[in-house]
Length: 479
Image 1 (cartoon, helix red, strand yellow):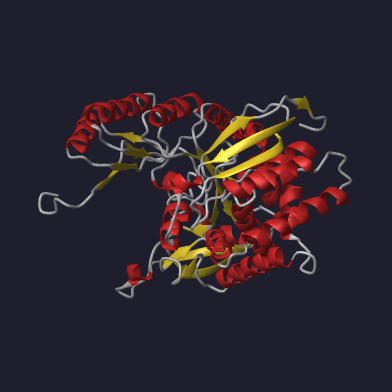
Image 2 (cartoon, one colour; image 1 turned 45 degrees about the horizontal axis):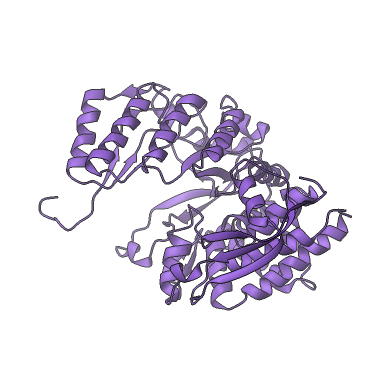
């Protein structure tokens, strides 16, 4: 460090080692015989002080289950106090413990309040009970995650959830229903969809286990998300064994599931049309499974752009199954590897197809209304499309926007995302979106700041100010 004074340093830090859980896709529990070994607390506090004194900005905590021990609350408090007094560390990233709801909540709340946490990971992996039993996570309570989701949402603490594609026993139906369940449970910030990779010392690495569940593997390079080709300058690539089908999820269904995951990420978590989806769900009672399926299965003749996006995702899934990369390399967009959904968000913007997409998406939901015979008015969804469009961050937009809607969509939408839903009201509502404060005159900068750096915290919307105009009237319907 002394020889490189201009470098910014990060730390990988353990407060304990080991894991009491036996997840079959993971080395951790089997490698440590389920024991958790603790480093001395005085030593850990001295290390924290050293990090702060040497201005270490980012600490990645390598514990498998931070919050599993009562003392972890004290460790979180020590890090928060160091930041308050010394200004460092800037961030402490931890992996949440399972089942210990109160301590998990307490530690993450401390880190969030201190500005040390950029998001709480809720590592579900699956919500299907047969799958959880197959991967030996049946003793990890789903109710713990759902309770934490509600509490963090209420406290305005950002979370993201992990789901793994290709787990034993998981079908397309259970995977698709699981996505809907997680979103309906309040996860509107991010679901991180991970492809299942086999670790050689995990139970899942046993050929007998793989044969039992009909797991089909391919060897492929490990590529860092948002990494560049320059990372492979020595010509030596790290490889992984990836699952691209199982007995429960045949190759075609694996591709369907992968397409659904990317579609969900693009529409909902990249916020391309998140407000219309949320409002449509709340007003009509249509499930998120139904709403997302409508886009995945869109008729190419009626919705050519939506179908074009789906075809791109399908082709990317085929590339992965053939041993190709998990990510899409885009030399024209920063020269880095993008998740397929982020690449598509950028491409729609670059090709000036956002307006065309909004027109098709609106028509797709309007047709869905008719297909399901929904008696709810579509007007709130129309307003939601208008608001989503002006809120969506785009490059080369330098003016502020003003929009008047017939419903108080923003309050309604924010209430749902914050776990405090209120009835939608018919009320002329004027919004001013200060886009000029967040303008991007350079496409590459927009790609970097919004789509890359902002993806986990969902920074795809401009900030806005609501101006109330007229008196309110209740709107009948399903809420």
